[in-house]
Structures are given as C-alpha cells and as structure tokens.
Length: 187
Image (tube, rainbow, N blue to C red; front, side):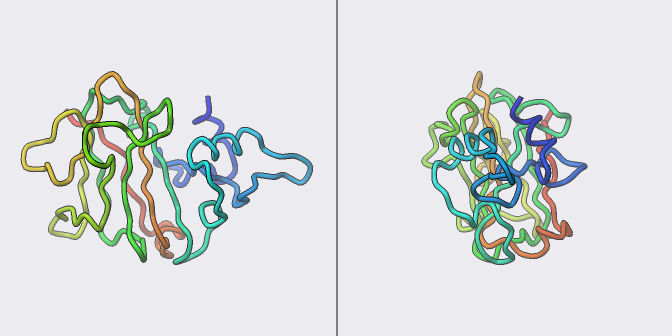
C-alpha cells in the first residue's frame, strides 16, 4: 500500500518511465500541508531515516543528499532475496561527493543482514566500471562469475529494497539528463 501512496503523491516518483520513487516526497522536511501534517509520510520518513535533516528532503544542487529508492524490478515485481538482479548506472553518476547503493530489509528498514561487512557498495569502494564509465551492480544470493566486486548478497526468503544515495547531487540528477536504469531481473 505505501508504495502506491508514494507513486500518487506529488513528487513521489522520480521518473514516469521507471520504478524509482522519492522516499522523501514533497520538498518539506516536516511533511506539513497548509492545514495538516502528513502522518503517513512522516511515519515512513522516521522508519527509513529516524533522523531529520532538511537536506534529505529539499532539492539543493551540490548540497544535501537525494535517496532514490526502488522496491520493484523493471516489471513491477517486488525485489526478492532468492532472485538475481542487475542495476545499470549510466556514466557520470551525478554526486559531487560520492554515491552508494545500499540494501535494506523490507520489514525493518535496517541494513540487510546479508553476511557481508556492509550491505552497500559506493564510489569510494572503487567498483570496476564498464569501458564507458557506467557501472553494473548485481544483487542476489550468489555472485555472477567475475562480478564479485560489484555484487551484494541478498537473502533468500527475504524481501528488500535499495536506495541509491547521491551525496551532493548535481544538476544532471535534478534535470533528469542522468537517471538510473530500473533494476533488471536476471535469467
């Protein structure tokens, strides 16, 4: 239900042709209307972040952060821990400081306990890039052969979601001249 509410909210979906949602929609870090508080979005924000920073909700070029999230693959199916997926990030990820992709447990919104030291990969980890500067990241119970440095383990029988964290997002993110591909289920 929550995912659908986000999709219908103003600013809830980053791209009309993709599954990426704005987990902090509305440009208001207090989620207040003119005459009401949006309790659903405040609750969701607390569950995901449990700390308030206006830079997480408002849009500021090369300041703050943006956290596009995805709960579903390119076909609209929820991400499942027993299946394997690929996320393609085009060249020049628009983050002036750094970027990361982090996996979260769908039930608790805490980092996915997957047996790896951290349930994330980031630009400071220096994941191998493709020849054109793009990145292919992989999620699943086992790593695809030769892709171990760009892989995060998932847990069978456990749902999860991921956030693409852009620290000091650049203009290309806001004007949508750069946008991540949908998460693709691998065969």
